[in-house]
Amino acid sequence: MGSAAAAGSQAAAAGARAPSPGLVEVVAAPSNLGLRPPAPGREPGAWRAPGVLLSEGLDRRLNATRIVELPRPSYESRAQPGTRIRNGITIREHALRLADAVASALAAPRFVVVAGGDCSILLGCLAGARRAGRCGLLHVDGHRDFYHPGNYDAGSRLGSAAGMDLALATGRGELLLTHWPVVGKPLVNDDDVIQIGDREPAETGPGSLDRPIARWPVQDVLRDGTAEVAGRALGHLRHQGLDRVWLHVDLDVLDHSELPAVDTPGSPGLTFDQLGQLLSPLIASGRVAGLGVTSYDPDLDPAGEYAPRIVDCLASALATLASPIAGKANT
Ligand SMILES: [Mn+2]
Image 1 (tube, rainbow, N blue to C red):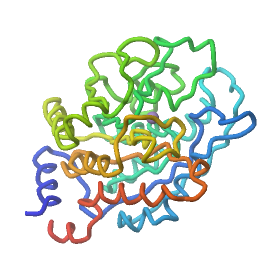
Image 2 (image 1 turned 60 degrees about the vertical axis):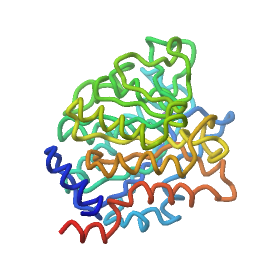
Image 3 (image 1 turned 90 degrees about the horizontal axis):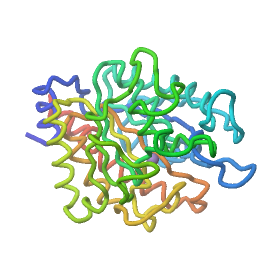
Image 4 (image 1 turned 30 degrees about the vertical axis):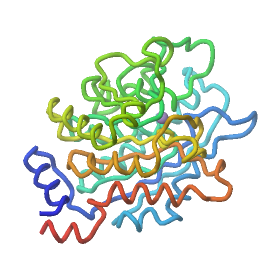
């Protein structure tokens, strides 16, 4: 029995409605709404990432059966009325469109890959995935993205949703981005979240993570290995009775020497190979409903040298789903 067939039977045993291998849909979510302007009067280039990844062959490499391209939302640097989150109103509008796209892909059923965009796309991904019931979150990110009015002074500056997406997803912050149609609030319970790969040591202070969110920082992944941490994460999902999760991958979990073309690069971090090795068993478990990839900024990659490596990494992580041979093995 191949690994994809094994993954399929595990998912069936767990009661998940898993798509057949090979049925991948790509949703392009060209948002840069959650980021600060890189310079006065300029807007972040993360909105270009889906187009660049598609032109590098992302859909072909994933053997995607369908591509849905959402319109590019318009970015405003100034505050919008009634919110202390930059582009808050537009983020909600974009997230609702994204949620529709994700929900229909999952209902098909297809495995959905959402190409962002900045981390604020997590909200639309979860809002769509949750319409079909309980769905946990594997948040693989170089940062915890956990700023909320309980741990920083929201009055002092306009907030960036890309630094608060995990807080918003767990119901912390403005109602504008925490309460969603069909689902209500929160998009995901703390108990149903696993954070992997952040390099932030502080357990208190601005952006600190509340218990009981499970967390393995990047230092653990580098010390114990990707297979060990993936195994712990899957053990936690089994323990929680979670047979369905959304996988959020912020590419800033990579070391800045591997991928400098993100809004907030850092170190230590993973290599592309390590990221693929971490994600692969998670996806092969059959518990992952879909994946969102965020933070690549083509404006910071003028020679276009990193897009092929991102596509390679995703293709390797998703190999058990994308391979037509794996599909035949399952029939
Ligand atoms: Mn992030």
